[in-house]
Length: 70
Image 1: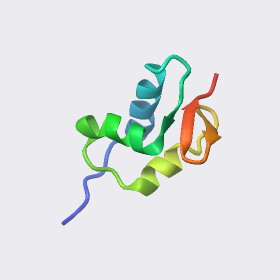
Image 2: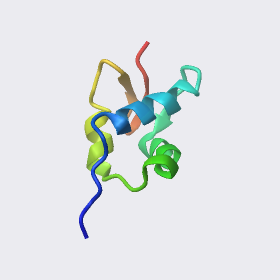
Image 3: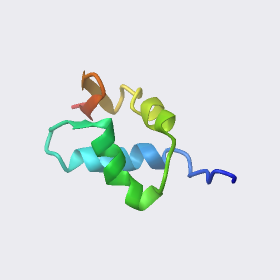
C-alpha cells in the first residue's frame, strides 16, 4: 500500500495550530498526534519527530514534550 503524501508543512501547521490552543501549555507527541490525526490521517511517527525539531516554532520542554516557542 502506498503511503499518502501530505502537502509540504501541513503537519507542522496542524501541530502549531493545536499547540496554539493550549495558551502556552505543552503537550506530548502522543497528544499532538491524537489532535491532528482526525484531520491528516495516519502520519509516520518519524514525521512528527522531524517536524518538532524546527526550533523556529517548537520548544522541547521534556523528553517527548513540546510547546510553541514564544
